[in-house]
Length: 625
Image (cartoon, rainbow, N blue to C red; front, top):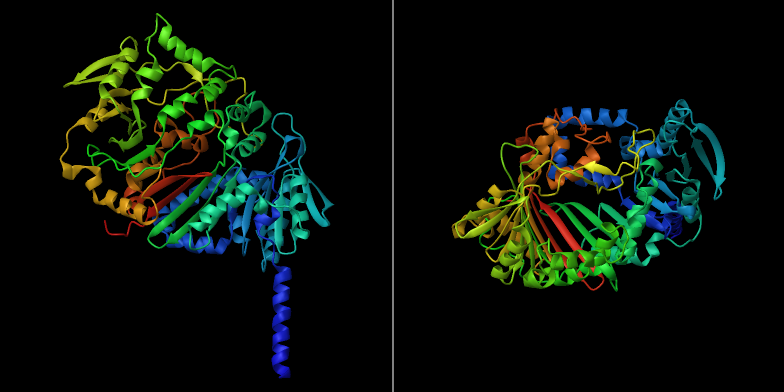
């Protein structure tokens, strides 16, 4: 009996010790005014799950070893990303945590924002201390001054950098080990908030309405805990990103203020979860946009009715790379364009949108068309985007077709004629009974560049904010437009439009292909029978053009949608013209090595009472097709 009591007592003591020694999860450490955060609940679990996916196996493939090695050298030779901000490289961060890892941005007083990284290093204190010792030596070698201060009762090591005239002074780097928690930051105020929350009971991110709504929705759809969680308060996060852009590279006025003025502060929070190696899926991403309403001004454009009618029409051929279908109340969207148009194009001047509509209708030199009555009124609710590519692969290989459902094809065709026939940059072409309006490509003029302000790096060359006029081509410089199949069709190229207009046998339609049927069945199984969004694409075909351009070192020349986005991340800020690719892709293996690891992708979205829920997946390529 005494022995049993002793065992029970020992167990109680052990459990109590664990309870006291356990660190709080990150969402209880970060404060309510956290504007963005990424949380990995268990780094080792993430590594294990990633290794089980075909994508993980691809990156572990010996054929990828030369590129992996070269990429690591390039990243380590540049003082970029976390290494620049917090002093630690991704490689070091992978090796330290025994549990949770989190990185967040906190809004502070005086419109300042601090970055903080937290890592549970239980059982790895010595390794962590050694990494911090090497970090201290490295920072001192760069001229940083070291001091130790007490923040919330903890001794925090702080490194500050001397001011430099020709480059941007680096922000300080702070770190400490509090119990089993490594905390690294770049702002004393942000560090203090985390340390105070660790030792006391303070309001936290986990208690906020937006955070609870987002993860309540995502987790209710999942049976197991996620390997990655992320969360942002969108407009506040954009302000935080802008804070890290050096002053001489910022726009004179923040886009966030214009978005607020147009009503987009109705979007309170966005977040999601990522599961790896889950059943037949390589990746499952669940996401929620939290907008409890009421939506105001141009946010009312976000009107996406749920429907079961998102199946692609019979005329879409089976060989396309991907297809996106959206249900949108176009008339409602049109009625609320004004505020955002006035803010972006009119630079805050009210009434610019209405002036444009009035000019189109009444200007004797214009098309004299009432867009609302003669075009918009005859559009339906379904919008599609079809993607493909042409060989040989080059910067202009991507082919796109936007299709908008029409209720009265004849009236829409008349509106097109009225709008386009007098345009000197538009040519009228005839294809059988169809009239096609094709854009004649000319040398692009200098236009205002609209680009995201990404956080820059201290000491990196910058383009002054005054240089806002840059040479850029329109999204679809070779657009071809017609009305056919009860759709308004807008293609990126005339040849692709003609290809999409060719009659096909029923068996050659996309909806008869095995790939589409597999994704469609999976979407229905996971709750996507009804919604406002459906996406199907073949990952191998979709990613191949971008992959090949990276291999060729021609990524900055890409005119594809994905390419234009990635160029923000893969190119240097060298001013106007073609920019230098940052990543050497010459050691990438042949795409056939990659293709066998890529599966089919499906996405569905649904309008809920308090926002939108989106679920995306990539199937394992080993599933029989």
